[in-house]
Length: 116
Image 1 (tube, rainbow, N blue to C red):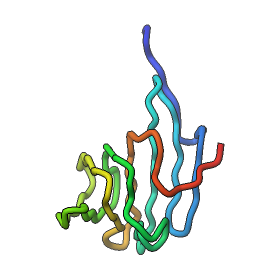
Image 2 (image 1 turned 90 degrees about the horizontal axis):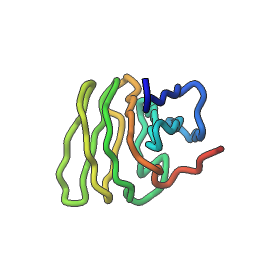
Image 3 (image 1 turned 180 degrees about the horizontal axis):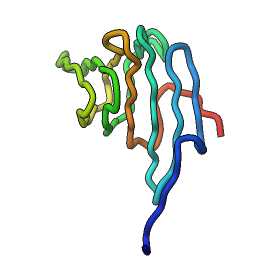
């Protein structure tokens, strides 16, 4: 099949690991895809950086639940099967006792040092 690209998160191009979160990035057909795993108790402004995330995210919640608060004060909780688009200027945290797995179609992840 012409024009088919595949990759696996088990062979990432970049990774990061912080307290209560980790992730892997693959590139498929020129598109960056991150698998982010946020452990119970993870909170962006506590475990990544003290200010809100300035990245734009478009992703899919594969497992767990993610709380999100936008710069306008709007809050939502996204669970498995939810597709999200999150504008820059937001905070996020894991809801409940299950890790949240976010598949994120983003070129970079704000506030994270990645390893090649």
